[in-house]
Length: 311
Ligand SMILES: [Zn+2]
Image (cartoon, rainbow, N blue to C red):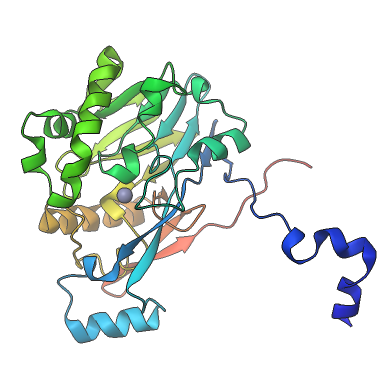
């Protein structure tokens, strides 16, 4: 029987607590001529009462019961994305950052990049979808060490908001405490900051897309190579818990909740109409897949894990 097999001495080294505690935190696949790799920064938790705030209470309860989300908190992953073209290595978003009290199980980006064989100094461009702490937490390494040569790209609107003298009064209360450290990092980056407009090409094959609502200057990103296009949603689609099948449900994390809904629906329409490959920062790792229309809403269809290298 199995238990006897596991007790054999030659299996002892792999038994119970001797099993490895973790696996490498990246996933890599080809998109045309590009190599793409979500890299895991870890997970963190948010209160359930922060999401689906405008849903009818009975429908909300029934939905979350049906999806096994009945605790007071739910989990979100944080997955920055490497985009490697022939000419540039791009990192989209930078994780929660190390040693954050509110996210003790995140902040492992440096380790995951190492697992992927990427030195932070190799990154040419860092793209910020927006300036919430779970996306810019690792940016400080662009100044102090690590990402020593990377140019930092974000939308003009987003930079203007977070870098303005009265930024703390223009962003939600929960985001205000992060403003001083972010402004200090922006100041230290100096000429390495490159604000862009929606529709502009960040590097060949990587295009900024204005998707406001979550923040006023939120950007999604389109990555295109070899006739294949992938939509990197950022937090315009901030979860798979309800954003696909109930895109009209709001959450407190959108600065403009109604605009957040409008942008979300428009992105979902585009993803289905254009049959785009889709990836998002907070989707279950590796978080790559497609969107299909279903009923009044949409459904997340995760892609198969791809093995495209000979062993
Ligand atoms: Zn986020």
